[in-house]
Amino acid sequence: MGTILHLTCSPRGPLAYSRMVSGEVVERLLAADPAGRVIERNLVETPPAFVDEGFTAAILASPPDFHAPSLAVSETLIAELEASDTVVIGTPMNNYTVPATLKAWIDQIVRIHRTFRSTPQGKVGLLRDRPVYVVIASGGYFSRPSPQGTPPQPDFLTPYLRAIFGTIGITDLHFITLEGLTRGAEARAQASAAARKRIAALLPPT
Image (tube, rainbow, N blue to C red; front, top):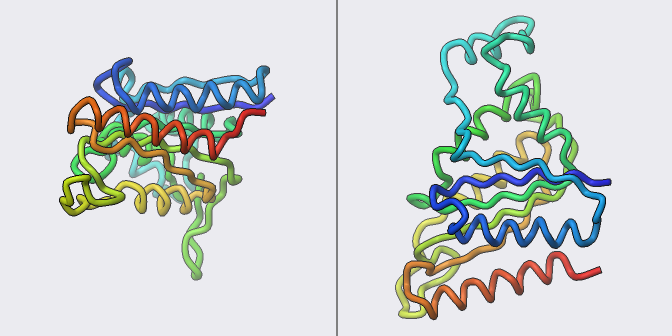
């Protein structure tokens, strides 16, 4: 039985395209493994705490104090990630990058001595690799020019997620994009169709 960690972080709740389409990815995974288990983590309803002085002191202690009260949330979130065989993330693109709630989750799970270690050759991830499917909803276009020829907006989201997950040992990332969602009904329909085509290519029916 596989375990899926499903992260959602749109303030639009059930109406969010990132949430709806990432839910379809979860459904496709469960169709392939009906005995699978899903860990739902809504980062808007339960936003992770921001890193504070206590958190910083605990991770820099020598030796590190993994049982410090200030690391309790971090340990819970890391345990969910460690328990997962697949990760599905539904996120909007906010100002060219990840929303604050997703960044807060990342800051809790990317920890020296716990999920990565520092070596003379660079950072080495301590977690096993697993597939990560990231559904990105964007009002504009970032992977290509708009249909009207407007240049693509900057994209700091996809390279950042590749780098940060790679830091902890997870490199098997797949992106599913929904672009132009604020450009009218036709653009939204085209975005949804393209996303579902991408899902079908990544996760063909069994």
